[in-house]
Amino acid sequence: MAARALREIGRGARPDMRGLLMTPGNVTRVADQLARMRGAAMKVGQLISMDAGEVLPPELADIMARLRDQAHFMPPKQLRDVLNRAWGADWRKSFQSFDVRPIAAASIGQVHRATLKDGRDVAIKVQYPGIARSIDSDVANVAALVRMSGLLPQSFDLDPYIQEARSQLHEETDYEREGHHLRHFADLLQSDEAFEIPEFFPDWSTPEVLTMSFLEGRPIEAVSDATSEERNRVSEALVNLTLCEIFEFGMMQSDPNFANYRYLHNHARMWFASIWIFTLHIPWQLGADFFLRHLLDGDPASNTLSWRWVGGLHTKGKTYLARPDNIAKYTEGRFQPKNLAKFAEPLTETVEHPLIPLLTPQEPPEGPYLMLLTEDDLSADSLMPTSPAAAIGLLATHGRSPNPIAGAVTDFAEGAMNSALEPHGKRAQSAEDWSDPLIEAARNTGVKTIATAYAPVGPTRSRLDRAEPLLRDAGLSLNRIIRPHDTITWPHARAGFFGLRKKIPSLLSQLNLATQPRP
Image 1 (cartoon, rainbow, N blue to C red):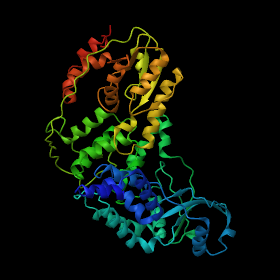
Image 2 (image 1 turned 45 degrees about the vertical axis):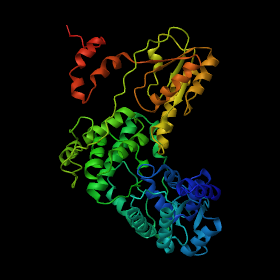
Image 3 (image 1 turned 135 degrees about the horizontal axis):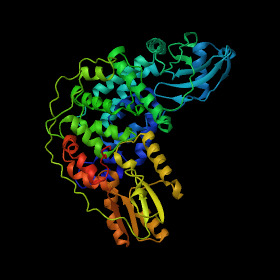
């Protein structure tokens, strides 16, 4: 790094500190060091990571994203010293078992599972020693480090994050306060069968140690493998809880990390987008990016157009405003929010987005071919007149955004593709350049044609566009086949839905799907 800086100075140029700092090795070392600092560093990092890569540069996102769930454990001796101070030196006599390896670790503490002699199965949250005393100085030091790094845009105001980190850390280090909040939330949700709240045990809790009942559970991502009825039940419960916390309870106990929210009803998505844009005044692009990275059914076209429609950019000047009476109606009076925006001023933009022309429809292959499955269409075999000689599945999930994609989303996409590929004895692959795996698969199969369902826009389309010239150079043809109903429907989808709706009867007739009159 020093040699590179000297070379730039020798040329009369000012060294690019950001470029010098952001080598892969430096990113790793900074993240590891901040994780060792735990409290202040991790809390600032976690707060910044909610914007990192969206408002902030991707280099900082690479660091901060690692701090969302990364912390160094206390050594067993240090853990014993903390518990000796909290409970006395003979505390082990009151336990049947105590697992010294934590089951979780975060910014200011780590969690252990244990069983008391009286049979209570407990989760014990133990605060890192010295965290409370060092909050102010650590936060100030981390803020100085971030500012000096040159990673932040000059227009980015770090002070609100620093103040919030300091405030949150001071509150979170009082575990007795957290215990009382836990008990209060249990009272608020005692009649709600959808949730079970751990029981707070004050007899084994102190300001530095929080003891509660241990509840078995699986990560929320596991719901993606459940039935549609169960997924609906969980999603409704989570949305209702969030709305209750905001509009009824006036307090939130839920984790504010957006990555924990996986499922939203379509109607709730519109409310979400409207509140995001018109009440909170957050750029719509960040919301669209957030949805695309965290929704299992995130689709580049419909997701982007939906956010633009809510903001008045898709159908120029026409917006969607989340109204309290509408929310009250569709939640049967359970939610009656206040202080929502009462007027939705349509968003404007100076950029004109060019239309992407549809490709000329291509006929399904007549001879032997390699079938390509993508996330956009996992049933391409239904378009083909004959079975393929072989199949390949290529994922483009990582291309949805330069920011981190939720694990539930990547797992869902990979699982769905593997299920579609199972009859062909293949597994999903992931690659930035699709030409290499396609050329290799076609040559191994001995075919000259690759057939796939047409992808209109997004990371799948981009990868196909980049790969096609290279496939052509290799003597391979790529057939992108448009479904018949898309071929006749898309030309009418010029703006909003209502223009297309008028055409539906005639479109159904063209597809021979019109309802026949009863005799």
